[in-house]
Length: 109
Length: 115
Image 1 (spheres, rainbow over the protein chains, first blue to last red):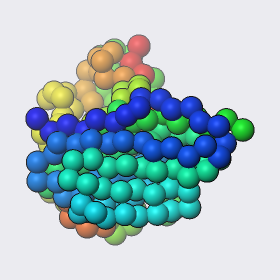
Image 2: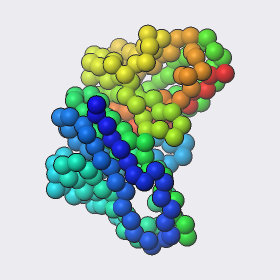
Image 3: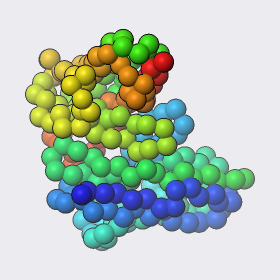
Image 4: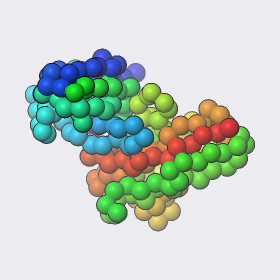
């Protein structure tokens, strides 16, 4: 069964305290690994797509990496405005994204 | 607007009522997806359109759920005889390319509460 598991479920950081979120996946025929940010009451906002092991992408304080079994979202020197739920999803087959449950990040000033 | 637009944003339906949720994808986007998101969960796939063709409806939970995209642009998700377990956020998403391997952009969602 195709699965995407995210850890931790929730993470509280102090402003400036760097950390990483994990996404492990068992998705057959993976066509891409996606990271989204979701604020309360909003739809998911696209962050990154990774297609092959070893690939890395960066945007401001965020860097996403991909191995054959997992992906990491590294957050460097986070700010309170980075507080959100971060969702990971594997593109399975032709039409489906399989999402994890997300990691709820809270960054305190 | 430049993004995926959904309406209504909020809908309260009495159990047994029919509801229709509308999605305006990003102009020119070939692919359109519907997802269902329960509180505290990640979105779950419902159905996929490529232009006007519904290529995958494997995620629709029952035959009370029906989706269409007759002209390959606007889409409607219809839920007949709503039940309490249908309460969720219904997310529409679109992509310029074909299939799930391309960047997919989500709308703000339609929040459905069945009472």
